[in-house]
Each structure stands twice: as C-alpha cells, then as structure tokens.
Length: 271
Image (tube, rainbow, N blue to C red; front, side):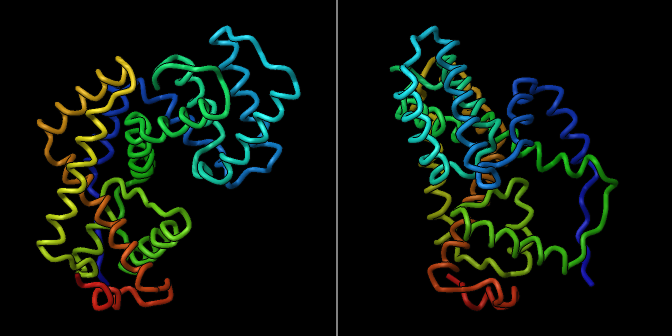
C-alpha cells in the first residue's frame, strides 16, 4: 500500500502567513460560515437584506421604500441562489462591505446590478483566494503529520471530481490532487497541451492584473505582480489548479462518470 506523507513544514509556513496577513482575517472568518446552497430561502434573503441595509447605511444613501426594497432583495436572492451558491452567507455580507468601501470600483446606488458586481469582484479578490488557501492548509496545522493511504487519496480525488461536476470548478490549493493524479500518470497531458494551458493561465493572470477597479486594487495587483516575479512557483501552482479543471472538463465532455475506476482515467484521457 502506497503512502503519501504531509510535510510538517506546512504548519510552520501557514503560521507565518497568518502572522503576516492580518487583512485576511475577515475573509478567513467569512469562509467558515454556512454556504448559500446549504441555506434556506429565508436565511439567504435575510442575509442579503442585512448586507444591503448595512451598505446603504455606510454610504449614507437614502433607503428605498419597502416595496422597492423587497423587490430588490427577491431579485438578488434569486441571482445569488443561481450564480453565487458557492459563497457563504458571511461572504455575501463581506462582499457588500468591501464594495461599500469603494474597494470594487465606483458606486452607482445599491441596487441589484451593483450588488451583483460586488459579488463578482469579491470572488476574484486575491485576498479571498489567499484566505481559501490558508484555510485548506490550516487542516494540517490541527493535526500531527500523518500518512495518507492510496485508497484515501483516490477517495479525495473522486470527491474533487464530484465537486467539479456540481460547481463547474475545483480549487486545488496546494495542488495535492493534481500532483497525485500526475504522479499516478492519470493526468497525462502532452507537452504541447501543457504549454497551451500555461499560456492561457498567463494571459488570464496578466489580463486580471491589468484591470484594477480602483486605487486600492491597483496597489494589491502591483504587489501580486511582484510576488509572481519573485516567486515563480506561485504561477506554477496556478497552472496546476487550472490544468486540473481542464482535465475534469475533458472527462465530463467524454462522458466519464465517477464509477469509472481511477486507474482507467489515464487511458480514457491521454491528450
């Protein structure tokens, strides 16, 4: 039985990151709350109503009448359940708070389109991505370094594929699943396909960092550009996260189901 060791230095690295990044604390806290798809309609509507009211109060805007406000909340709840079901309830509140602080660009009232723009910007916020990465790594901090069996690794990979099928995306922070599948020769991209994926990741990253919405975001993007120049391994990690999603998309396009044994995937998808 093959064993995969989790390196003990991960815990130390995470502890250092948490000390150096206090701005991530609200994002980390928000990630730990209940997700939209786990919530009732009343919980979702109540959360959105509170978030919108807080934004109106913070911006010192004049509240709309009750009928208009209720229609706004109903429309937002419908959009959130359909397009933002992976967010947590507290993330919705945090997104509106960040938006009302002009962190996601200029504000034209607190209506449906404005709140949806805040939610979209929040999902792309690098502070959120870094917080998600730390949250995953934090699981290793709580436990002693341990050995993971081959069967457990396969189970984790299958669960990741199920998540992709449900959400259309999987965030493989730490590249644990990608590394496992590549080591087992399950992911078997040609060099040409890898280069194509790398070019796509680089273009997406450059495009995102070249379009800040405001001065605060511009400063964060400049820091991120410097990080990529000084830490090329970060770009490599981004490539692996994207490549895993490309691999999962290939499986779905070919009609591969979860009951297909993991060792058969390599023969099914060798591109």
